[in-house]
Length: 303
Ligand code: CP
Ligand code: NVA
Image 1 (cartoon, rainbow, N blue to C red):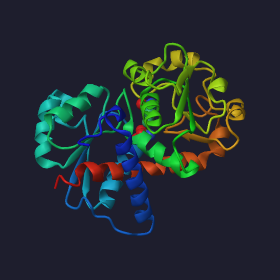
Image 2 (spheres, protein in one colour; image 1 turned 180 degrees about the vertical axis):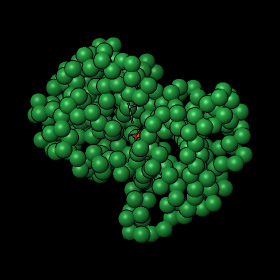
Image 3 (cartoon, rainbow, N blue to C red; image 1 turned 60 degrees about the horizontal axis):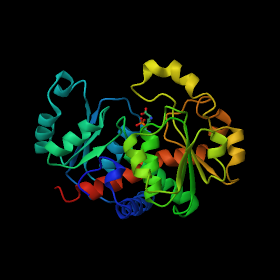
Image 4 (cartoon, protein in one colour; image 1 turned 60 degrees about the vertical axis):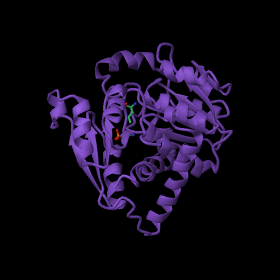
């Protein structure tokens, strides 16, 4: 594995290897066992969109691994004034040991990887959010002690989260059901990928999708960059919510997940959110551990 651009690029073995390493690093951190695996290395973090979790978990993670992280807002880089990503990639490759980028177009991340000579990590694009899903899989395995055979249900927009969750969950052997309104299905590339999987389906009813679910997941109705569609989406997504009716359809020990930030009373009720806050914030914590594993796998030999 040279980069983490999207989960479509990873084998099941590579995903499981990252989850195992994430568990180990989490154990070491909790027990005060130092792991300065990336001592002296620097990660550049380019942000074209807002972030709380991704920024802080990467920065802290890099520090815990003995290295440094640089926050690079695209507004303040020359990229914001039109310097091509191809040139930025070649310059930053001369200083840094890895780049994490959060941006709009997936092609921008792929271009960085093509023109740069250091590992590139996708910290969210309009197409996908692989780091989040690695943390999600780590969390699901912690709660359920396995991944294969679990029933996973996602309710809401067929967005970057739905794309990565579909690919990640299918690759590790989970059964995936999505409830999305017509016109808001996942990306065609992801739908193409699912054609090999009989254990994938999309339905329109959230209650039907949640039947017998072990894991329920939702995300915002309007993602970053869709601010002018908020009103239209509020209408289109009405009812695409994790609430008591959906919970009643799922298994009684189902866990509830959300990548955050959450919009209470839209995609999830406050009641369900608070009842499942433990899972949701464990999930947020695991961003740190899963991303440390990604950085170790990608950067440990880059020194
Ligand atoms: N879940 C997630 O990526 O959060 P941030 O947008 O705060 O980074
Ligand atoms: N779908 C959301 C995820 C945020 C982590 C967005 O792209 O805004």
